Image 1 (cartoon, one colour):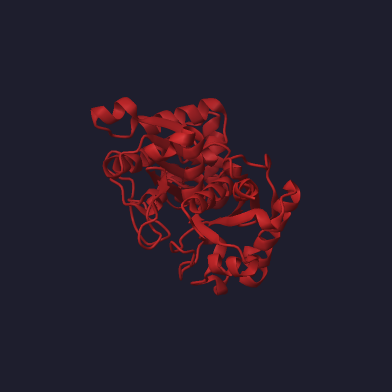
Image 2: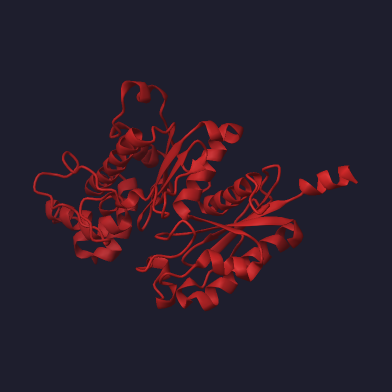
Length: 349
């Protein structure tokens, strides 16, 4: 009887669900730390239609990934959920919402609690930048995760980020810990003489997202650099479209586009310089669209980030820089890891 109980006690899994603007991606993690899904397992997220449609869609993602793996529902001890921020540490979306949560009913909505009530299983919430960092951290350090720290910058429409200390996600008292996208950074030496101080959609000026993001390119960098290159091919293209073309041109060696990405890389370096003084991490990860490019370009970009990060001599000897791996699956996998950590720490008992 005791032996059977011991086997049953170790036969649990967690499910991770990464909530995105168009799709939810799910995965399953067993008690031995093995992912049972090796590909994207997506269903439509329906977030633009509000909670009434999106919460059932999250539940559909849960059921779909269990069906895919053949795992029975009674083995699931916890579900990890991540969404883009801003949100509280307990998964209550901010009053202002986010790009994905523009529907009025999302304001101050408890997305974690709603999914937990729907499933009847504990749900552990984190933002998407945090869990992507957690996944990268665990992949790098495995069983030694608790002995190390990491920080990440994930560049997309906005500036996502995550901070891991002693193997644990830093969330802070309200859930806004590690929100490095809206961290004010020094602009001296980053901006060109006469270049306007960049502004962010959040209302701040000179924060990291105002430079290192697609929004920053559209709002600040491309309009300025076109004044320096008035005959550039993007001068005749609407700025929204032009901003999305900059990366491809930079990859091909376009001079103006490389200057834009050089400023983005320097901005990330400024963020990492500040992180080095606060948490002194071992690992500095970069992710997002900039790594979905040809190796020569992403290596150049990561090199500029590294050269733009200020360390004490002792830090420079040990700091490592790397790309966030498996970014399309990192959110779901990091969420499953966070849920498994909660279980192992006695959650639900």
